Image 1 (cartoon, rainbow, N blue to C red):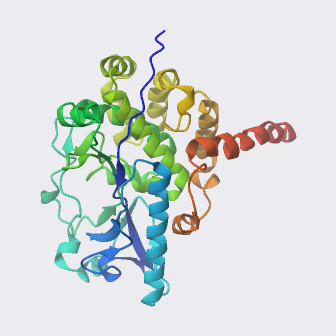
Image 2 (image 1 turned 90 degrees about the horizontal axis):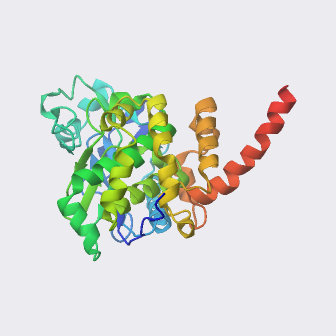
Length: 365
């Protein structure tokens, strides 16, 4: 068995997650809350209008904890703005997909009635999920919230080269390691509806700064731990492909799982298939991660059992079993996200729950 490990490298990570605003009557368009030019939430960060949705553009960072700190600061700025304007009863809604009424849609500017996202590129034959231009936004009133991850080029020549010249294989690894694994966590059936329009497996863009992976929903805005998980798996996928042993790593992973099985697991939010795919590669993940990088990639040999317990609880009782707090309140309370990412959280919170599980089973017997 090979002893080669993935080599960590510095890369900027950014994002543009979406969410909605809601009042007592239902979903309202972001233009009712945010200024047309966007709401500046600090140097390099702002909220913008993206159709019905609001979109957060936090300042990127090479560190997930620092990026989380920036997201926290942004939501505190948004809360202050809502209070300053007297928007009592307005809350942030983090659903994966919603349906807005025709009446509410007609109250918005014509541009805001349209679908916010332009078509993506895809590593599959179709150029995008559907031809959005052919979908009537007034008849199909479902709007979805993405949680796109941005990988920035850096002074590292391997990272720049792989994004410029081999981005399709990078996206394939993102699907296998990040998108498929996210299906085990993000069980919301609204994902199936969302992916009728966009956010399917293999979707990406190539902005000037690097690569945008467009498959994930906004599920990771539920908590910092989920954000740490999603970005950790994405980082691992990119660093696998930017490694000097990239060809060996790619062949090892892709020989274990058929590309179409990953595609189908993501697009159909198929938990059983996603678990089958994950179990086929979990030993490789543990094998290629050096122990001194625990936490960098979210899942390692040290917390694999805890990850499976984490997923089992979601299967039994839903994501709310782990994350009961309203997301915006959760983000606003973060002082410093360091030492509380997904790996550390599984080693503490999830392992404590694992320790309780046998006692519960014994008592029930």
